[in-house]
Image (cartoon, rainbow, N blue to C red):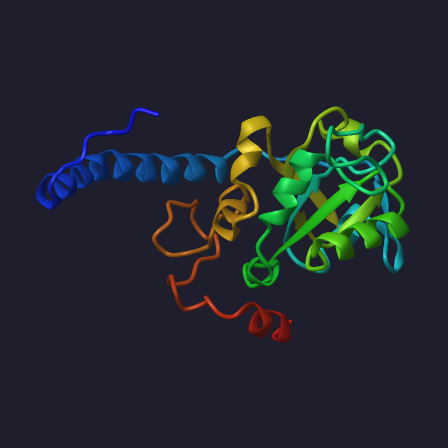
Length: 230
């Protein structure tokens, strides 16, 4: 392995400052892209979709759990999961990539504080999902069983992907979709919020007029404090 040159502290800090200029450009571009997402048109969801959850049958609207926004990740866990060389197969294991993604999911309590719910959905029955969550320490992730054409209708029947939805009264709208390498960044609270229609809902963001916003830092809290406030 050919390593980079070894330099003095002064040279190292100079190189760091030079790279920081580019990093800030990327951060500003990322913020601008999120602002464009908040201005994307919405797609009305006029078809009903149903899932099985730990407490029984629930609709797509029910996955919101009373909140305005919903993020749904389609995780491949079910008979369609093939055997991996060293990891096993269904029902012992889910897709290795989806499992890596699940390991990165932050506590949903922080999303709840921004009026946003998170759900994973798969083809496996609830008994298997419950055992999988316990095995891997994923009990903080709400995880439902797909029972109809949801995966096909929302572009996640053949590959993983994350859909964002918005609820206005009884109406549900699809507001964004990201998949392929775009899913690599999912799991972090900020990246989840950046794909939603309302964003992080902080005053520094470039959002359409009248979108809900509060000062940064003021809403940040421990996840159990967020959940206790529900």
